[in-house]
Structures are given as structure tokens and as C-alpha cells.
Image (cartoon, rainbow, N blue to C red; front, side, top):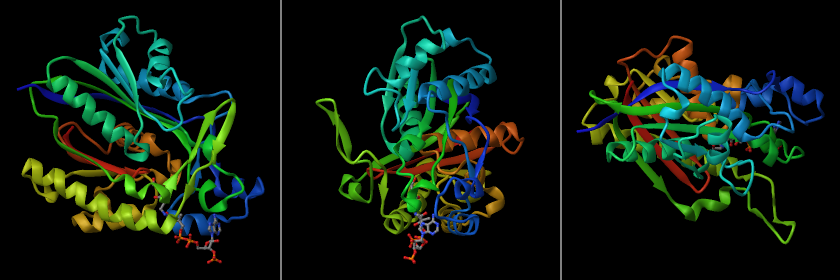
Length: 321
Ligand code: UT7
């Protein structure tokens, strides 16, 4: 039986943190008090205009490859989860392959599952490796959500940030990824979407993120609790055996509600939402890398990664790190 483990993690945040007060100073009709109380967010990072998702992905990937102790050309599969790609095509993954200097013509493609995108990418890569067709995958979540925010809409623009996180997955003798689950229900698409496209040289529809915050909140709490239980059940292990819950970082209140449903203390939950805001597909691998580099997550510990986002899409992975 081929097992799949996380061999290394990396992440990257562009520029200096932009605080809630900085947003107020930029003319947004909000306050640190409102944003912190409703979401737990204190700051986010925003990429410069000439920096794309592939640029953030490159730095995060270099750090993950270094942590994994392999060479870029040892990677034989690249998956980038993003809803803010550099271009309509080629894929951000193909651009990333070039920026990393990988010359082995390995497979490279993007996955579009919004804030659940990293879990989708991780699960797809795991199945490639488990099948025996591939040995070492680079899975990245990279976003420049600042590009799709309506900065005159205070109910959304304060919530999101830019960044990238990456992992190298490889074959292993011991179990690493124990169970995973992916779901989608497209009937909920109107409550969180960017309902625009490009045609005939013009933007057709609305190019900005629109969200019914309360509907998203309720849906997220429900499915995050369910999908975490689903992967625990699949593996036949209890929530008490989990050392760290590393959830999508959208809102501290969603994270607290999810932990409570699972019976986990917040002492066992990695949270970066205060520092990063919601970085969509990047948020889970960013939080994972912070957990590793700040010394919280140790080899041999058990983690649950889980995310939910536009579509709606959601998923989770149970992993012995
Ligand atoms: O990756 C998944 C993505 N999204 C999420 O997970 C978000 C899920 N939803 C949420 O986190 C919350 O619903 C929000 C943080 C978005 C909003 O919190 P809420 O408690 O649901 O607030 P609300 O939308 O009901 O708005 C309450 C009030 C309104 O004022 P009135 O009508 O009561 O006078 C808003 O106009 O807060 C006002 N408001 C703001 N005030 C200051 C909305 N945005 C802001 C703001 N600053 N940025």
C-alpha cells in the first residue's frame, strides 16, 4: 500500500501587514472594533499591483521544497488552487513550473474550488501518488483576493487578504493522509460569488466578490462540523486523538463554533485569521506552515485540515503529520 505524507511546508505573505486602522485611514467606513469583534481579523497583507498569484506561489513553493529536502526537478505534479489566477490561461500552475525552473515537463494544472481549493488540490494529489503514477507533488494555495474586492463595499473588503501556502507531498512507508472528503452543492452559488467574465474585450457581469455574510456563516458552521466528523469516521478515529484542527481562516467565530461542535478546545486550533484575514485557498496551507514554523505542530501529531468556500464547496483531510 502506498502512503502519502507531507514532506515539507512553506508560505509567503506580500508586503507589510495592513491593519484595520490602516483601512480606516485609507477611507473605508469601518472600525478596528467592528472588524475585530465580528471576525477576529486585525490585519491582512495586500500584494502590489504587479504581483500575481504565481509570484506568491513561487516563494511559498521554494520554501516548501527546501523544507522537504528535495530539488525542484524532483516534483512530478504541480497543482495550484486559486480563484485569482494570473491569467484566464495558461494556468497559474504552468506559470509556477516555469518560475521554479522545473524543466522535467511534469503535469501542472489549477484547481478552482475557492476557499476549499487547497483541500481539493491536496486530495487530488494524494490520489495521483497513491495510484503509483506520481511520486512527489507540489500543492499550492495562492490568492490575490484584493483584486476582486469592491473597496467601496465595507461588508466584504475588510475580510480578505493575499498570500500563498504550499506543501510537498510524497510517498511514504507510514500512513500520512489517513482520510479525506470533498463535497460541493452548486445550488448555493448566489450567496458567495464573483459573477463576472471576460468576453469580446469586456467584463461581462460583476467582477467583484459579493457575499450574503450571514447565509455563508450558517452554511460554513454546519458543513465544517459535518465534514470533520466524516473524515474521523472514515479513519475510525476519535476527535480526542486530534492534536490540531487547522481550519480555513475566514472568521474566528466560525472557527470557534466548529471547534465546539467537534468537542475540541481552542488550545488545539491553529488560528491565523487575526494576522492574515481570509486568504481563500491559501489560508489552510498558510496556517499549516505557521503551525510548523512557530513550533506548534510536531512530526507524528495528528491534524484535521478543513475548508469551505464559494460554490459551495467544502472538504477535509485527516493527516498524521
Ligand atoms: O471563506 C468563506 C467566506 N466568508 C465568510 O466566512 C464570511 C461569513 N460571514 C461573516 O463572517 C459575517 O456574516 C460578516 C463578518 C461578514 C458580517 O457579520 P454580521 O454579524 O453577519 O453582520 P451583518 O452583515 O449583519 O451587518 C451588521 C451591521 C450592518 O449595519 P446595520 O444594518 O445593522 O446598521 C452593516 O452595515 O454591520 C454593518 N457593517 C459594518 N460596520 C462596520 C457591515 N460591514 C461593516 C464594516 N464595518 N466593515
